Length: 40
Image 1 (cartoon, helix red, strand yellow):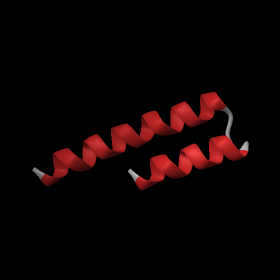
Image 2 (cartoon, rainbow, N blue to C red):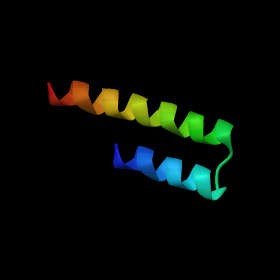
Image 3 (tube, rainbow, N blue to C red):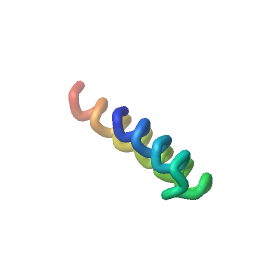
């Protein structure tokens, strides 16, 4: 989830547009879900 914070920082700094930041966060959520399922 630290990567999510970095996406926020990049969005605030202007490196990412709002749409790109939301897309990146959606991908992060998917990755976390996949990793969680692997640990079960």
